[in-house]
Each structure stands twice: as structure tokens, then as C-alpha cells.
Amino acid sequence: MGIGVWAYLRELEVERAEILAAVERVLDSGTLILGPEVRAFEEAFAAWCGVPHGVGVASGTDALILGLKALGVGPGDEVLTVANTAVPTVSAIVSAGAAPRFVDVDPRTMLMDAARLEEAITERTRCLLPVHLYGQCVDMEAVRRAAAAHSLACLEDCAQAHGATHRGRRAGSMGDAAAFSFYPTKVLGGFGDGGMVLTPDAGRAERLRRLRFYGMEGDYRAREHGTNSRLDEVHAAILRGRLARVDGYLARRRALALRYDEGLAGLDLGLPVTAEGNGHAHYLYVCRHPSRDRLLAALAERDIHLNTSYRWPIHLMDAYRDLGYRPGDLPETERACDEVFSLPMYPSLSDGEQEGVIRALREVLG
Ligand SMILES: *Cc1c(COP(=O)(O)O)cnc(C)c1O
Image 1: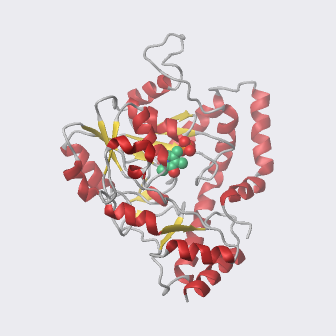
Image 2 (image 1 turned 135 degrees about the vertical axis):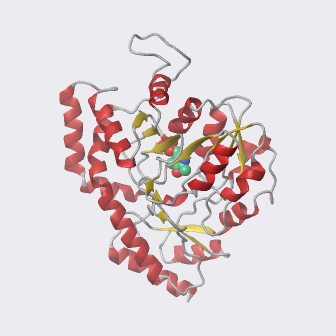
Image 3 (image 1 turned 90 degrees about the horizontal axis):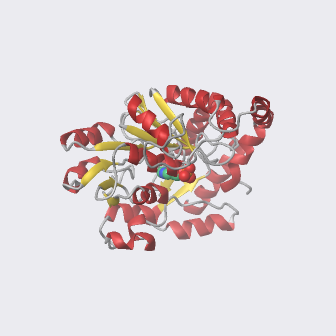
């Protein structure tokens, strides 16, 4: 069936007229870089998340790198995160000059197990980097407690968690800073790459504005070493329009998740678990099965092609061999990577398409 990786194009098609109008608005304005659209989108998105400041950047990866730098993380520092995430979570730590260290995950939610932070913190640990994976928040009370007890900074990776809540607070509002991605497949995606760093701290926001602009201020003199990482006016204009629709899209994702929960109940299949106090954004609907690959092959025969997020634990990837991890070091993470797969989950998935997926799973597993 024609559902899967490129599904976001369907939402963009629905919004075609709005997207073209946003592009025209930028054309008419004559400002392409760091103008009124970026500023307006920064304010709107930060407000939607309940955070005072937002700084638009070129990608979620850059949001993580610059977020770490703005928190003072650099060479000699260790950053604690998880290994069942998108590679950029980890590559950003290395790009910031620091060393990633991993904590294992809670087997129920597959999120960072905050109870394991205490034993993982060393005198070199400088920052905690929880990943709100699949659209669900990490237990941020526990993360904040550990951060406070050891005077550590906390950066939230919110690339999969636009609109997720934890005890009534939105993802991105619970750390010292938060990194978002607007890559097209995300809950709020743009028409290309983009990202944003949120922070409650005005001084840190100002520093981020310098870091994304060659370290310069308005007088074109560099106050520190910086880079070029800007959100373009066109992307910001499109994202501003899409932000108005995101609550509706989140509601549709919630309805789809509920239908999967009902339709798949009773099967020999691990369904997503929402931790107490969490409002799930349902970026992905991730199931578990001990014979995952056999199950996916049987579904592929029925022309249902599913993704796995994530199949390869990052601590065992060639690129990060130097970190010194071995198979068995993160048993829950490694088991999750062997068992997870994602069902189609995006707002324009039709009820009929979803029923087809449910029926196929019931046949294959029943
Ligand atoms: C997508 C993603 C990123 C990176 O965002 P880009 O905009 O693609 O650079 C980082 N972390 C997680 C968890 C992601 O899913």
C-alpha cells in the first residue's frame, strides 16, 4: 500500500494553497534571511510550548549542537543520553566537542530510565540530554532532580515531541534549553530542514542568536566563535502557517493511536505504553515483537512495509566504536532495537488504510 515514508507529502498537498501564499508573502517582503517571518515564528512556537524564548536554526541537529554550546558544554565534558535515538542526538554531542555516555532505557516505555542516572553520573558529566522519544516525555521530575543534585545542565531533545506534555507542561519547557527539529516528517514539519532552540533564559537566547550568526552581533563584529545556522524566512513563513494546524493534527494522531490500541488488543504484540502523567504526541506508534523481522516479512508479503525506529543501537555503531561500548552493555536498549517496529501514523492516514493494517496484523498474528 502506498503509505509510509513519504506520507508527509499528503499533508503538504492539503495545505498547498497556504504554503504558496506564505512563499509569496516572503517574496513580497523582500527579506529572505533573519527577517519578520523568523521572528514571528520564533515567538509563536515558543509561546505554543510555554517557553519565553525561541531561536530558529537550520536543523534539529544544529539546535542540539548550539543548545549544548549555549549551556557551556564542550571538550572534556560528558553528556548523558540514550542509544535508541536518532543518530543526530549523539553526533551533536560529538560535534559540540563533548563525549556521549549512555544510560539504559525503561523497558516499558523505551525512554531514558531516570533511575539509572545517579549511577551513570561521573565528575566529568556536564549535561543530561533526555530524548522525548516517539512523542512521549521522559520523567522530567527525576531528570531535573538528578541535574540539580549534581549541578548539571539539562537539554531536552524534542525533535519527536512537539505538543507532548508531562504533568501538564509541554515538551521543551522543562529543561535549561530544548532542541526541536522541523524536518518534514516530524509532528510539525517544514518544507525542508529547520530547527529551533527554546530556553527560558534571555541571556542564553541572545548567545544562541550570536552562535547561529558567525558569533556576530548587529554591528557585524564577532564576539565569539560561531557558525552559520539560520532558519530561512520561507521556511519560517510556511511553519508559521502549519503551526495553526498542529493541534488538529495532534488530535488526529491521538484518535489513530486509540484505534490501534483497540484494534490490536489481545494479540501477541507489545503495544505502546504511555507513562503516568504523560500526554503522548504519537509521533510514532511503536510496537514490539520478539520475532520482529519475521513479522515484518509476513506483512511485506501483504504489501505493508513498516519502519523500525531504531534497529541499530548507536553505542554499537562503527562511528562510535571509540566510545568503548560492547554488546550487552545496555541490555534493555539492545532488546528494544531487536523488537521495535512502527505502524503507519500520520494525520492523513485514512480510517480505511488503518483498518487494513489492523486486519493484516490480526491475520498474521492471529
Ligand atoms: C529528527 C531528529 C533529530 C535531528 O533533527 P534534524 O532536523 O533532522 O537535524 C534529532 N533528534 C531526534 C530524536 C530526531 O528524531
